[in-house]
Amino acid sequence: MIILGIDPGFAIVGYGIVEYKNNHFRPLEFGAVTTDAAMPMFDRFRSIYEDMNQILDRIHPDFMAIEELFFNSNQKTAINVAQARGVLLLSALNRQIPIFEYTPLQVKQAVTGYGRADKTQVQQMVKLLLGLDKVPKPDDTADALAIAICHGHSYRPGLPKV
Image 1 (cartoon, rainbow, N blue to C red):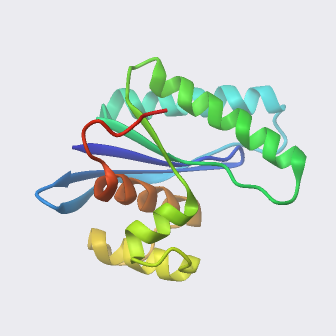
Image 2 (image 1 turned 180 degrees about the vertical axis):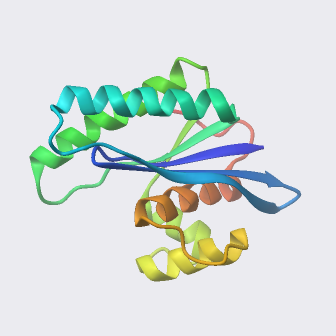
C-alpha cells in the first residue's frame, strides 16, 4: 500500500509518502509544502491546496494519514492550522482517498513503541525504519513520515476513516 503521511500546518506542511509491503517500509518521496508569511492567508490556503493536488495527482496514494490537531496555546495559530488542515483533507476527499487520523501519542507509540517518546527518538526511528542516511528536514517532514509509518502499523480493513 502507498501511504501519504501529513503533518498539517500553514507555514509548513510536512508530507511523506511510503510504500508498506510485506511488513517493510520504503520511502517514495518526502518534503514540505511551504507558504510565505507575507502572503495573505487565503492565498496561502490556495497555495497549499494546489501543491497538495499536484502531489496527489503524481503519487496516487492508497491512503492519507494525518495528525489530529492538539494545541494548548495560541488560538489564532490553531485556527489557521485547522483551516489549512481542512484544505488538505478536501484535496484527498476530492480524489476519494481514504483518510485516517492519528494522535501524536498514537504516532509515537507506533514508531518507537513508547507513547511518550521525544521528538529526537521519533526522528531517529523514522531514519532507521526507512533506511535513510539522515533525519529528514524540516522536522515537519520527519513527522509526516512518522504518521505514514503509524498508519502502516495500525491499518486493518474496517478501521474507521474520517
